Structures are given as C-alpha cells and as structure tokens.
Amino acid sequence: MTRRRNASAASETNDCLGSDTDEKFGFQSGSDYTLETFKEYADEYKRQYFGVKGATESIDFRDDNREKRLEPSVVDIEGEYWQIVEDPTDEIEVLYGADLDTATFGSGFPKASAENKISLDPCVLSGWNLNNLPRLPCSEDISGVLVPWLYVGMCFSSFCWVTQLSPSVLKSEGIPVYRAVQNPGEFVLTFPRAYHSGFNCGFNCAEAVNLAPVDWLPRGLCATELYSEQHRKTSLSHDKVAREAVKEQLELYFLQSNNPRLLRWQKFCGKDGVLTKALKARVIMENKRMEIVSSISNVRKMDKDFDLSTERECFLCSYDLHLSAAGCECSPHRYGCLSHAKRVCSCEPSKKFLLVRYNLDELNALVVALEGDLGAVKLHRLEDFGLVLPMQLKLLEEPKIPWRKASLNMRDH
Image (cartoon, rainbow, N blue to C red; front, side, top):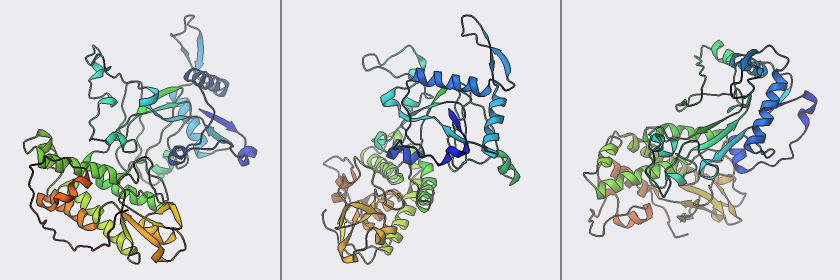
C-alpha cells in the first residue's frame, strides 16, 4: 500500500523509530493494523486512486449482490507503478507488513498437529510446503535460514524500493528483463545474484523463505564481502551456515559410514568438493585478515556463546563476527571486524585484543578433514566444534596439514 504525499512534505521526518530488523531490511515501523483493517485500508485506497482512471469492468462474484465494480487490471496497475518509478512527481510512502515470523503469526501452509501427525490434508506432508523444507541441525537458529516468513502487501509495495531500476533502463543497457505475474498458489524462485524487484497489485498475503543449499556457499561468501564494502547488514550469517554444514559432514563421516545422508554429502567434499572449496576460500580470507591485525598480539579464545542470543556485527561495516572480532578494554561492548580493528577506538594496539572462535591451525585442520584426512581433526578439538562422537572412537594423533601454521598467543576468555 502506498500513500502519496506532495513534494513539500518530503522534508518531514518520520517520528516512528525503526527496529534493528527494520534497518536491516530497509523498512521503518509504521501504524498497527489488523489483517481486516489492513485490507479495508488497501481496498479504499485502490478505489480512490483508480476511481477516476479508465479501468476494466468486472464482477465480484464473492459479493452476494454481485454488484458491478470498476477494478483496475494488472496492466493498469503496472503502468501506473512504473510511471511513478520512472518519473516521480510526488513522494510515495509504502505500507508493507514485512518479516512476520510464521512461527509466531501462523503460516498459510498447514502443519501436522502434535496430537494428530497424520492428516487427511495432502499438503501437510507435501514437499512444496515451506514448513517441510529440509534443514541442517540447528538451522532454525541461524538468522532465519530456512525459516518461512510471512509478507502482507498492498498496492504498489516493493521489495527493492530504494534501489529499484526501471525495466526500460535495464533494456537500454542490453540487460535482459523477464516479467512474471504470480497468481495465488504459484511459487517464484529467485536465484543468487539475480536482481529482482516486485510490487503487489492489491491486498494479498505471501510467504517467503531463504534457502541456503551447499552450492550457495561460494556465492554467499562473495555476497558477504560485497555487503561489507557497502556497509550493509546481511540477512544471515554465512559462517554459521558453513559451520553447520561442515559439522554435519564430519559427524556423518565419524558415525555412520554407510548412512545414505553421507553419500549425499560426499559429492560436496573431497579436494574438489564445493563445501571444501568454500571453507578453504574462507580460511584464506581469514588468514589475510589476520595479517592486517598482526600488531595486536593479545589473542583470546572467543566464548562459545559470543553471538548466541545477539548477532555480533562490526560497528562500522556490519560484517558478521561469528569467527573473529576485534575489541578494546576501553569499549567492552564495541567490536569490529579484523579489517576495521584499528578503527574500534584510538587506543594503542597493546590495549586491544582479538577474539577468535578457531585459530588458523584448527580451521586448516577442518579443511584437510573435508579433503579426506579425518585424522586432521584432533580429538581435543571435537567438543569445541560441537561434534558428538562415541566414546570408543579412536583418531589419529597428528593431523597432516600442508599449509603454513599460524602461531597465535591463545588464552581463555
């Protein structure tokens, strides 16, 4: 839903304070609505906005009286929308109920009840049900990964309002543009690094879910770096996702050599596996970042609950701090990524410290383990990584790590 304001009102400030989630996704908090009042507002706005415009005549068969009404067509709405984007004469305000957790507000996809897990509704167990998408252990806790979200939208609302480009601009630069009209009951899949935007043709509810399959990890790593350069918040922790994927693979290796899930994972491991390459690239990147902070000798072991309840991000670029962070005694609650460690404060390097979840030796050992040398994971490191192994399991004592070892002055934190 949009509300049109003239240009003179553009300087007015919004006295609604947005939450961290609002800032992350580019929204600001607005007025409260129920679903019913939201629909009434949307319908009334559409009637007023398009009431004087040429519109196709249709019959609302849901109305008992079958009154004839003037309803704008999809073409009418789309034309008006792009006219606003390409040649705005007034400021447009979008009302959009976004990022409502379906675990709290409910889902349009049915769920099996705890009392009766067998339902007559075939959609309960359908693979197209967003509630049934496969998950890694603990993935529900990874910043919304594989967790459905509910979007409630109205006329003209857009996913990419700030950065939106008109199709005519893209076409003029030789960029192919594809248009899709999503109807009720249909799915739209968006692939990584594909620019996309959209708007609603009227009141509707839609659910969306973020998927992070293994072959997404290399692309996700590139996205994380790009977001850092642009000082943008990420919607999920790439390092947490990668960590859970590595943990899943190693647990299967150690516990169930004939487990069908292991066979499914094997294609992602080995020296040329996607998971192995993604972790190796991340370790190389972390190594380069450690070189930037070589003047900081105080390196501490990161507490395992460092970012358990709150996402830790760089104060400057919003980079995810799951693997490492820089801080100073003068600012106990202020952390930066290794690239911006020097800008956390103006104190001397001797007063600053680094927090690392794993040192470089341990990260290298994980890479070698994914390549096939399970002895690379030392027994005393398994508990820290979260692996659950049988007591009788015996591992090789010394790992074979071909890369340069980095010596860090480690101490408990």
